Length: 267
Image (cartoon, rainbow, N blue to C red; front, side, top):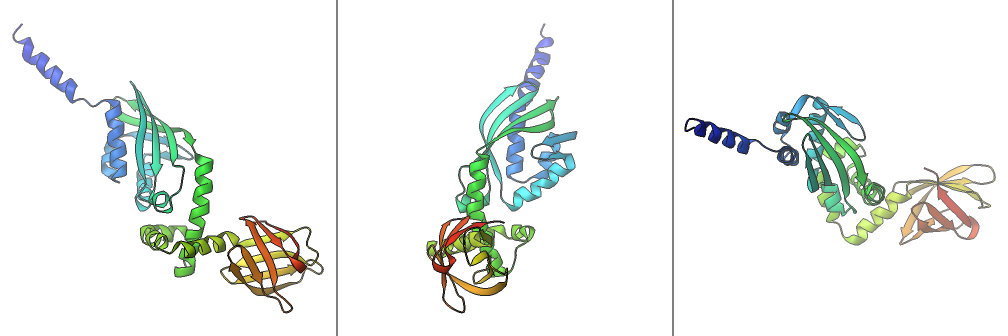
């Protein structure tokens, strides 16, 4: 019997050293949060697949960590269930964009991690909570930020913005609230507004912080002019008199006087 005791002790020690599936998932998330691709690689099986809004193989999944790093994306486990060969989690996902621009509510992902032995063979995003509200908040705050970057640096390529995202964000959030409010107005004003009930003007096309093209409702002629924004009022210059429009929301302008009518954003 005595000779079996060391064997039993070794078995006990080996079992104690074996990581649970939950611990492996926690290690994976920690490695991803630190953007350590090699540690992530060691956890994944050779035939690993990720199923989310798109499908990624192992190589593509590892490459996606570079994008997560650029935006400083972090995941934190809110709930976890260890069910032998699978682990189910509920995770909050935040990026530097979400944090600095105060985008709310946070994205919550429900995921299933599947294992064969101690290797992770797949991750499936089962559902995403808060997606609609998050997207609305993100667009409302991110579009003015990108307008600022374009206006200040002449950059409108998302990939180029991503390379210095922290620098640009820090500059933008450091602006006075009143200035950021102006950028918000200018950013959401960009595009074409069409009226069905204005007698003299059919379209308004805003470009940048000063330029607007007016299309008349009678002959369809267009001419370029300039505009100014004062709180929620837009003043467009013409060769006769200024046209006034009230900003009702991000999609609607209400014209006064000769421009009386409702102009709705078409793109």
